[in-house]
Image 1 (cartoon, rainbow, N blue to C red):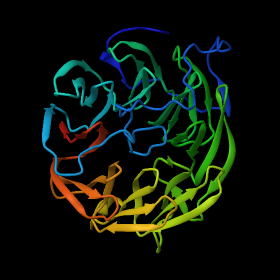
Image 2 (cartoon, one colour; image 1 turned 180 degrees about the vertical axis):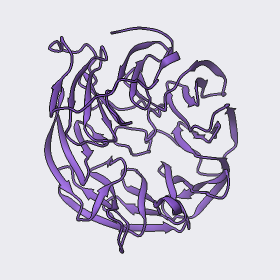
Image 3 (cartoon, rainbow, N blue to C red; image 1 turned 30 degrees about the horizontal axis):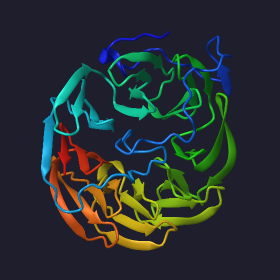
Image 4 (cartoon, rainbow, N blue to C red; image 1 turned 90 degrees about the vertical axis):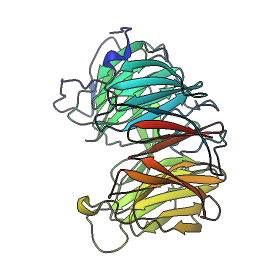
Length: 400
């Protein structure tokens, strides 16, 4: 099962389909030995890393060790890529930026933008966990080293796209859009089990694991290769979960959207304590499309999400961690918080009329605009040290 080769086939979608599953279906043998790779529940990113799109296991989009520019920055470097319109995404690990852009995986020195290496790939996004770089395709997960070699590649036998992955205590748990999850040995890539228990996306704080399901959030206890449910808390109807949960400090934030669409607030954020108690449910005129949080702040970007009107209205809301309203930035369009820093939150509004859109640096306490920067197409971002990394439609920039 183990093979070591270049990232040439990392993330290529597999053709095998899994036709139905029982609650727990054992799929391969031998599986009774303890996996040799074992990531502790409380593993955290190193100070100089941005290891996944939402930064950390809690999905906070906040690197407490970073000090990105609060005042208007200068361009340190820029790399452009030839893409087929696919999104440019990145992670940053140990002084290097790993960029997926179309069929290219580029490794870039974060200090000066020098390209160190390039590989071919079909991965859609990446995640770094404790020495391991995962390349995630539509229905395939590939585990590799930072030098570009592959440890294993596993087809997720499902008719749905991969939604989230979690590498902890010897196993990789892979959820997908149709519901349920697969369990893969972290050392070999062998599929240990398939579960039809509904799980969408994970959020982890220290050794406490939670996940969204269809109607709210659940506490999960990892026992061997099974996720056992502890408490379960649902939205006050009629809301379904609509994005990753965020675990920051002693609060779990769960975004939801009204289903079916009727009159009234179209979105909500459920605020839970670590014991699953409902602290508060915040209503929003539009659907929360992305959250970011620090130890004392919550930022909620909202948008109209109906197909014909997507992005035509929305706002960015700031709260204290307990749900007390701080300010609202009236974006008049859909808007996402990309990175939350102590002084500044960086956000991007939807721009349906053209390929350019402004990156907004907003004062985290007052809601005032500090500076803006024109960017190209879809944007993701991360903060490492004094550098703000932003990825547009066909480029990555480093701002300092």
